[in-house]
Length: 62
View 1: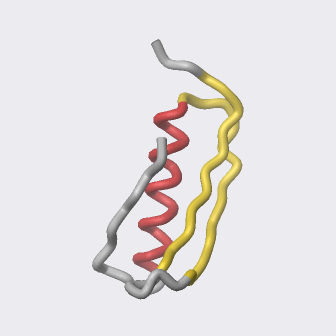
View 2: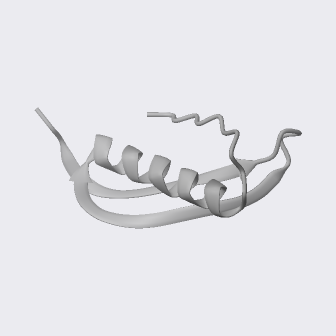
């Protein structure tokens, strides 16, 4: 059974020396937790791609 609630997503992009490059966040609204996690992954990968970063390690905490 899916649980719905008010959701947002956020993340950080770090370089290969673990230095902060940028942060991002999105207010999603009411959705299942898995959808919020997928929005966070999408936004992070989209931002990394726009910065020219092609070699990515994606970590999620939920």
